Length: 336
Length: 166
Length: 104
Image (cartoon, rainbow over all chains, first blue to last red; front, side, top):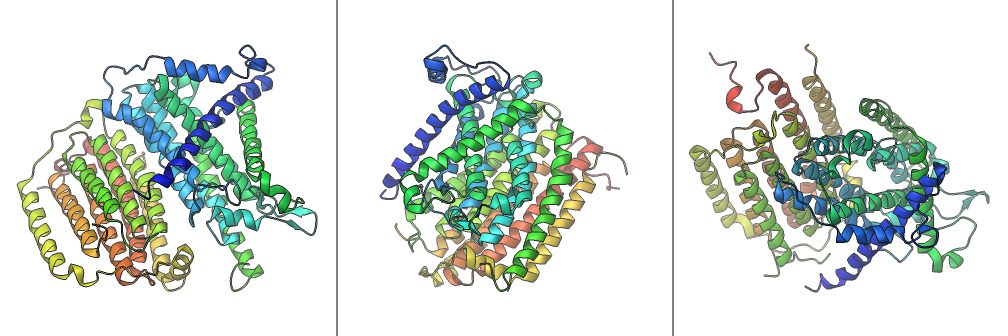
């Protein structure tokens, strides 16, 4: 029992963060998409529509929870939980600052990818249990693309791991502090441009974001695997999607943009506001995802699979090879 | 991680995995069976954590839960013509039962006789860095062979499941 | 109650392996047989990781064997499922009893 009690506050904190993050992100998504479409987005509830999402959450909570006839009942009930729990677990290894994190894992990076790889199973579960053709097609599309793009996603971060020599997210950040030659930040985005591009494309696909959102293409599949879900069960699925985009964006910040640190600013200044810096950087990443979402058209499923298997994976492998040779030549006898 | 295995955690995970295995074998619905298998895989991943094999635990989740289960579900759904086909009666095989019982008894006797020769859990538990170091030095040749096996399996799976007639 | 020795892990692995063995023999669906084989592979892995922790904690021999077992069983499940798909296209069935075209 003694091991269980101390674990409760961080879990509650993570749930709170997920909820707050979901509310903020939905508002942000509507505003950003609205302005990209030359609309205003929500304006009525509260100043500039600020409490619109809070009202929506209350509406969602108070709605009737419909369980359609003919569903696979146990799996129907369990699926939102199976989608939600891995998203929650993904927060465990994220380093918000030098000290603020739930736990420090030696295999932090791999752990985060491993728990995120459980999400497609919840998606298939939801799609199958719903006994609905749209739901099943949406679920299978989602699972196929997430499984296919996990490979380039993992391969794209390998060069970073090879150079740092650790899977610990905090050490990856520590490696990126400071500047080269007094002007260039030691961020991996400047050192490993192909890795970053591969990571971004795979991440968009992993998150089922436009241009790769055919799993819930509104014009074809109603709402994809979540079609039959209502009320808070739908809320859980929705929340976990927004939470996943936070986690992936946070990973991008850790891997390529120096985590909680800023170049040219001494650590003593950063230390008190480090978590804020981290969250701010993460939100910039999410903004870029939304920007892409508002700009690009959807691709076809076969184009998606061709891109993943025939282009991204070979390029990622070749790039790993190049980085490996350079690392070996630059630092014989081990990585610096 | 403490240097003894926590009995309560072990028992919870052990029961989770056994219940998962029994559920997999007794359910009539093949889709449910694959989710029971997933449950076993996650529980065994937890047991690896108890044994301070952190890397293996993560890889277990990544490979078995993330990839193998999804693959299984895809093939199950591709080979179902109707949704109702997923439910089939559970076949009971007496021969299989006898074989499993005999095998189980033999293993039980073996464990009862030799199982507790090493009872103490040693203190040292090397981390991921040491694991990787040894994997690419002492185990380099098996590692290369394993990657070759995977490559051949990949090509073979693509060849076999190709749609058009050869 | 607080300490668990290697025998407990070996016992658990034996139970899982036995269940897997029963499934592999008894079930008639090819996919179920493959799933039972996976169960057996996991049981073997658990045994090796447990013994590696107790017997060779610094060399981690069992962990390397477990890694290679994972590779082999991943390859096996990939090939096995591809085979099931290929046969399903010809016989429209995944029952093992339908795969009897070589019978005289």
